Length: 160
Image (cartoon, rainbow, N blue to C red; front, side):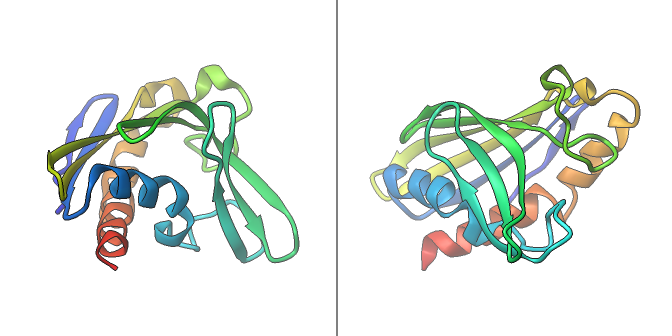
């Protein structure tokens, strides 16, 4: 289950999955498009796929059925199977943010509790970097349609 805790500029969530740390990491990164809700997009077109590039300097982006793309995150750290860090290049107005100084970060860590059980911790931090209107972001991304939904669907995908 997801347990949100909020601080003024971050939101944190945690789940425990019945999988090895390697599987937990791979499903999160390579399977990101399988648990991210398709309606969570800034594209005008329906999403054909969400791509999570598995290297530093890569992106997370949505591809529309019409071929359009929306690059909304940058991979800042990629350390399999323990950690991934990516930017959140979406403004408080739910538009792509091109000023990297005005983006937040999402860090996901994977800790093996046993060979077949992994704790996955997600922290979305530095939300104040988004500027005017940032105060509404924690409730949105930390609410039931935000990271808790992603992690619940991710947990189901790990079980499959």
